[in-house]
Amino acid sequence: MVLTPIVLICGDAPLPLPLGSINATRVPALPEKDDFDEAFSKLQVVPEPRLIVVGDDAAFAATLTRLMRTDRLHIELAYVSEHSTAGTDAYRLATGAKAAKAALEGKAKSVPLIRDDAGIALVGAATLEGPEGEKLVGEAYADDSLLFSGTTRQVTIVPSHRMPGVRTAAAPRWRWLPHKWLEGRAVQLGSPAAMLTRDGVRNPRPLKRSTFYRHDEEWLLVR
Image (cartoon, rainbow, N blue to C red; front, top):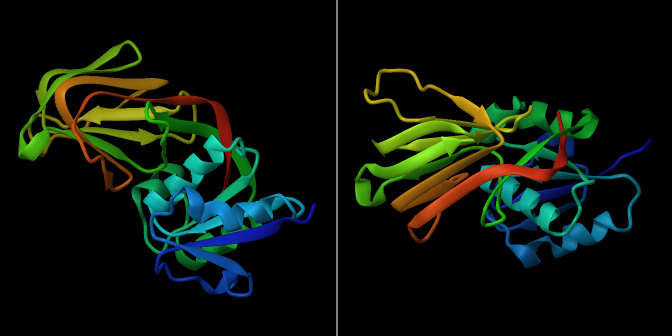
């Protein structure tokens, strides 16, 4: 089987040498719906396409979100980041030239797709905090397990490359204590006002509820 790599360069992300000979599409650092049109049109006409995203976690999450929303989760997806990120850590991916080589030569494997109730995929980390530097007030669960009730400095949610799919932790009372992680299919928070940041992109308004959960389909990650 001969794969056809399609490279999407997001913003001013540098292109590693192993990808230098491939015709690439350049889009904004945080691509939106219409920015994917050119690259996605190629997915329809080439044999065995593999989409390679060169950028950061936000760009990679935007691409995965667009694949999900357009019913293209059968497309193999690779991530090339210049530096380590929450996303490369979550999926144990290489960076730089090693990541580019893996994007071309690696194997695709089905992994859980984690999204939120706004229909946005998560590839690195999401955080929930109180507004304007205040503590986060509310209650959160990972499946049926209580994560916190009352106040906490921050809740962190990360995807896992294995089932059940989501890992989460509330900030410990003292900063020097380790986080206690819970795993589940879903994480739900209720709060008077919570500020959400997904893969480095801050939600414009506070939320009263936020849910991250495993999508009913998996996606194909190249590693």
